[in-house]
Length: 245
Image 1 (cartoon, rainbow, N blue to C red):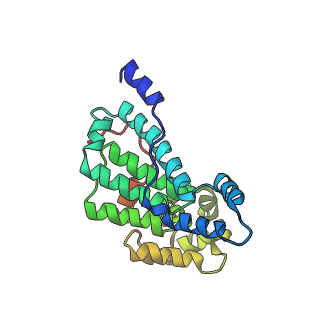
Image 2: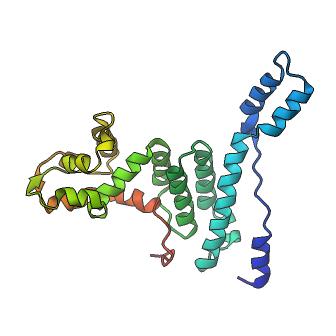
Image 3: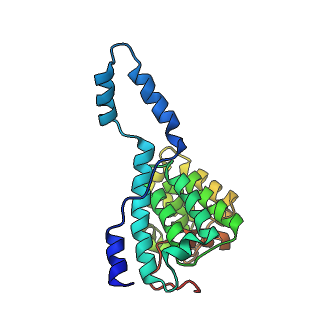
């Protein structure tokens, strides 16, 4: 990228954020302004003090994403603002991810959506049906679902769990994880519910989690190919990854 283009990136104005989805918020504000005793001055104060939450979320999401995409265009050969803007697959994913980002305050979900967009920008595209399904998982699953899935993909990355099962001759992954992370069972049965959700979507081998197995088996991956594909979809972009990897 040339010095001139770097200057343009630095001077890039905030992205536009308005569309028709603020109607409900504006109607609510208008209702407040029409209450008895709330005159023009009070309404003006309300306008100054209460900002549009949809606009705020969209602005924060888009401006952070724009900065991250600038980095992708510098890092990945052949990727530019022009190529991204004219790639219908990327544009569709960007629109869908943005719609979902507006619906959540949870940073882990926002981070997963961001990673999905950046990975697509770098060349990691899936079948359209899978892309829509995976974006739906980010929206539907709780942050705990995502943490448990990542754990089941590689149990050895969880130090508390490894300590719990390191001297176990026979045991189950379910028991080991709950003992290592008792907070996941508040209320009781939450972990089992999460496992069933992930298993129903074919992301993990859920039947093996309750089964007693050897100590070495307790640290083996329990995700399916589709589960691993989803985790790759939402993984932190690899600085060394090329679009054809």
